[in-house]
Image (cartoon, rainbow, N blue to C red; front, side, top):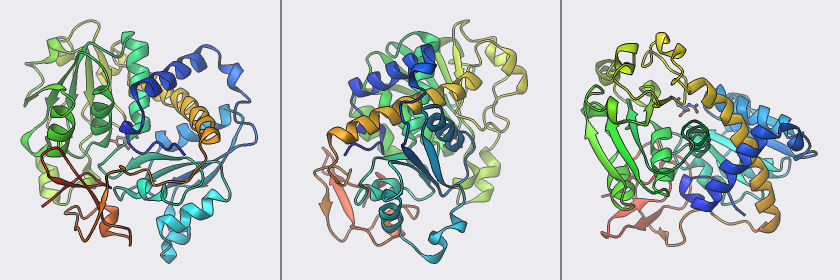
Length: 359
Ligand code: NCD
């Protein structure tokens, strides 16, 4: 059974297939109106969401399918102490595909241990958000006309921003991508992303602490919100919350063809004045999120028919043992799951659920 838990679950050709299907859906919407007739999507949202949950719902409705689920786990058996695995077994009896968002990292991966239907990770803690990545890719494809050979600046909270982590992983599949990381010291990209992803897959990246010096080089500017809910220390959030703000003065330094993306919601990192600039693509990006999720649902249901076998979606070289993950928000520290790690090329161990380095 194919799931989408991490962007690396998709090969380059699978990503291209989904993006191409997304483009076809944009061009011929009515052809897909009955594509999921009689199918049910379960949206299991253990964490707040506007766009992601409603775009999944709207995607499934446009495909002629139905949607069940919850947007507040306090109203479910979770509040009685039900585990992710048990909830997943139950939902597998009711639905054909699951979209799960969870504050605990690795929760959707753990669901794949027992799920008899495809599981889509709709965001797990600060870790991954692969469907936002597909949204970003479809948007870049439609705005720039290509998915290779461009320079992208990621600005803001690169530490906790799961959309950034996932998009960088997917871009590692494409040629000629240059990444510029624009963040204050406290919000830099996590080590596993720099060493395990960028270095390992040969992504050309540089780190800077201001926007002005790089604006003119960018083809895409990916703005992000400082992720208040992920900070363990409120004083630190207050210190960094207004680090970078995009305004018309900064836009004046950029190429006429640059595209501004933001997964939304924005707080104050993009001034409203920028919305009128034709390069501001973040509201077009929202609509692409629906089209690409339609494409993903169609593909995953098709792939599930070809390969219905239940299997854990973790790496095949995972090692089981008495490891303790240092990440307090990792599923391995929250539920009674197998403690699994994998060894990287340098012999270092990483948690299979959240990718943190195990000391
Ligand atoms: C993002 C998320 O939830 O990670 N939002 C989204 O899915 N569109 C970004 C954010 O919350 O800042």
